[in-house]
Amino acid sequence: MSSKHLNQATGKLGEHLGENYLRERGYQIIERNVRSPFGEIDLVAREGNTLVFIEIKTRRDSTFGFPEEAVDSRKKDKIIRLASWYLAQHPKVNPAVRFDVLAIQMKGSRPLINLIQNAFEAPFD
Image 1 (cartoon, helix red, strand yellow):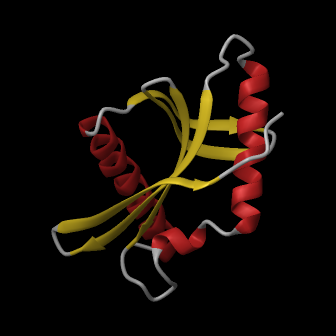
Image 2 (tube, helix red, strand yellow):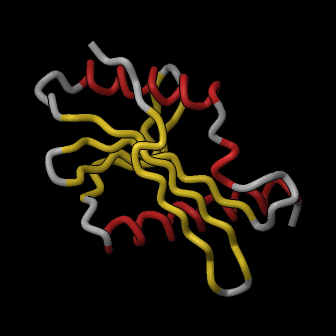
């Protein structure tokens, strides 16, 4: 399997594990892989009255850093633009908004999962 295909398979596995992890913790998944003119966000969910935009990052090892380190300022700006776009497309949705990062490290048969709630904030008007 090529490196590109292995990375894609790892990402898909991470998204599947992440979604199950979040459901077990009471998140209601609204949409997956939301595409916009600004890119894609892995999950849009609801936790209580809060709309949560979730970025899932999965790594097989820490050679290129920990998964959460991949959500840098450029990626955060992209997610914030996507969230603004999403809210404009759903004008009846006016909840509190939160940005979470779900970092998954594949360690043998047991993944290490780190949920970072309120990973960053956006200055919504």
